[in-house]
Length: 346
Image (cartoon, rainbow, N blue to C red; front, side, top):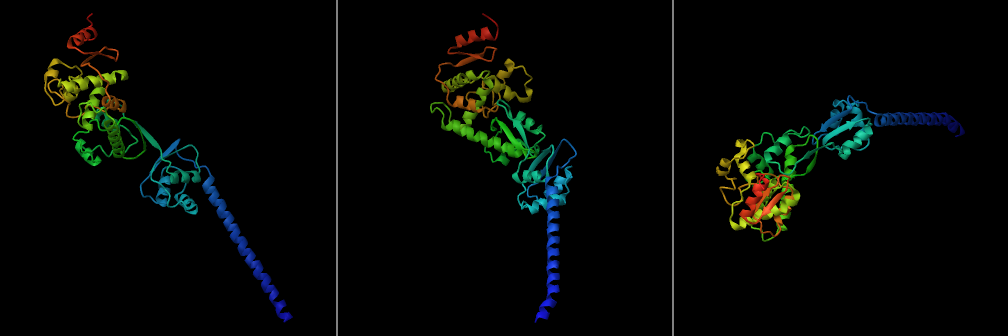
């Protein structure tokens, strides 16, 4: 029995040594693998320019994202980025969008950026008083957007947005819009359209119930006239009050900006008497009531002023030349103001 034990001892010793060597080899491999992954994850990634931009398409896999990163000019082989993402359990967390890398970044930081959805953003400012035609021109000139709306007519665009209005004029709220670079301009248009719907609903729901308007769209249309007639913000409520008084009296609104809008391409910058006499749907000298559509994009302050005009007996106003207007109750007083401020007579 003792001889058997003695005979087994060398075998046990060899087994222990063999197992130890295998474990040591595995530990060495693990250490090398860990060091390799750490090197991949933490080394600064050089790239070919001061900043590198790329877009991850919707539904892209980690492998596809890794290929996009490599092809963008960042010195990170696709297999390394994919391996890092899988080892860290991020394979299903990549988010679509446009990204920008400026300065040094590591693969781990880049992976964090793509899984957080830290996309690069552009900015578009839609200012009050723009026509929709001018807004579309601004939109089309914005290089960071995908111009999916270019081929759409105004009617097709409204249909795409689910809008029931016949004209796009005035339907897009003026504001500063941030957007993911490379995103569709249709998304931005939808945001601006729904923003105007919300603001118009607020203005209509809180309006002075005595104003002579029947629908939110009429409020939007009148607000667009107030927007174009306002030189100074402080005059806005009084201008709205004048238009409300004229509507109540059945008096023509007689606002030049509406006439100019109706002339369209025929307006050369000089409004003549014949223009005031030439009938169009927007000629508020030849037709009573509101024009059929807004003529520009009113802002929230104008919507609010139009929904809450002050009590006033004024039915005329004329520009003084400094941005302000002079308001009058009678035609005689108005004519005197016109002579003084428009013709230079004392």
